[in-house]
Every structure is written in structure tokens, then in C-alpha cells.
Length: 229
Image (tube, rainbow, N blue to C red; front, side, top):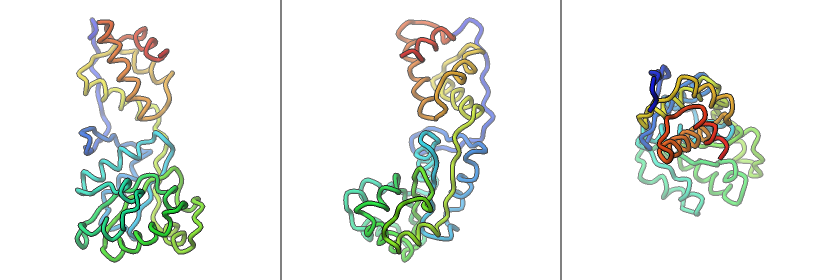
């Protein structure tokens, strides 16, 4: 709440996710979104989505699951669940799955199980979206058969979000909370915060909490206090 609130506009295309949030589409992630839209046509059972921490991989997996009515099997697979049982309910041609942190799983003690999972997915015509910080070509996979399959799979990267995308996200986060801010708040935040989706959500939450606690408008001095914490 401010004396002369500005009207914040959001021009980025967005997609809904399972968490109820929207994913903003920008040049740094557009190719990834296009690949996920064509998930039925992936040339192999696995597509690797890679990028630095905070670039939006996890959020995009939620968009993928929402669009495909898929299932995140990361925890089950990591806990030793049988691959054929994990994918058994998919039905031919209709299964979409997600595994996050795939590099550790493909290079560690679960490498054999990962290879089995890949083969089962191919037999069932299921599709598995895996995420990592690097493409499979850079993973240190000791199991040769698994290495050859994953390195041949499609890998698509997400770049670090730029100022325009982070700014749009901040606008959306404030709008979702029905908050109005001074016109100079967004540029001030952009110049001083970490460039990641997680950092933007954390900072907006801190600003909101501080404004409520102090019964103050969202202005640069208030944002400065949130940043200092």
C-alpha cells in the first residue's frame, strides 16, 4: 500500500504448474518449454533438462507434470523402488515421469537401476524428464551402457534468468499477494539481489512480512531493511 501506487504490468507468457504458480516463459527457457510441449515426440525415453541452481528447473518440472498428468518418481527411485513397478501404472504411450538430481543417480550406486529404468521406459513407451546442473555428456557415468544411452538422449539447457525475467517475476509475486509498490522499488531490488527465481520469491516474502509487521508501505527503505536481513 502506497500513497501513489504504480500499475505493474506483466507481458511474459506463462504456464500453470501443480503448485498453483505460473512459470514465466522467456528466451532463456523457451526452447525447454517447446521440448516439453512435444513430450510425446521425444526421440528417446529420456530428456535431460539442465541449468544452474535457481534457473527454474524444479518449477518447470511442475509445469510438465501438470500438463501431462505425470508423476515425480525421484524419491521412490532413490529409495530403491523397482523400475518396472514405478512405471507399471503408466499404460502404453501415456506415461510421463520426472526424476530430479539425475546426475547423482546415474553416477552413483543406482546406476544399474537407472539403466534398467531407461530400458523399461523404452519398452513401455514412457517418457522421463530428468534434471541436472550439467548435460549428460558431462556426467561421469561409469556404467558404459547407461552412459551411451543418456549421452544420446536429448539435452536442453535453461540459462540464468536475466533482469527482464527476474523483474517480471517480482512483479507477478507482488501482484499475486495483492501488493502495490513504489515505482522505483523493482529496479532497486534488481540491482542488489541474487539473480535467481528462489531469491526473488524469498525477497518478496521478506518484504511482505516486514511491511505487515511494521505497518508500512513497500518502499525502498523497507526493501533495504529486508535485504539487510
